[in-house]
Image (cartoon, rainbow, N blue to C red):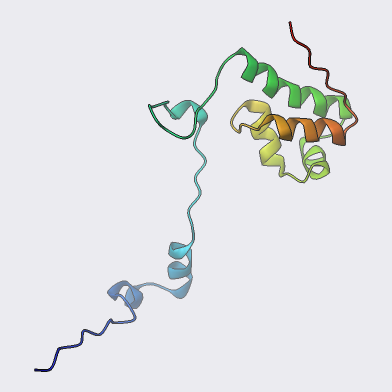
Length: 118
């Protein structure tokens, strides 16, 4: 008894009704900016959103450092190999960054950070 072999058709019907440019665009990974205020915490999620006084002062610190350097967001971003959108996100609290990133920024711009226990 011979088994029937199913052949996959190397295209879909939509291929007949769309351009190559549309198909290429549809196959790209989609990245969407989401305002941090729209994200809710929920149990056992691997990412946590920290919105407290420490977060507020840390986000303000990046803006203060940038202002000390007298650089625009664009020039500051170039100096630390980031986009100006990223710097804007840091300053407005839309993008979180870790302490290591903060320390690298400080080192790059000659800012000494002193940490002491209260």
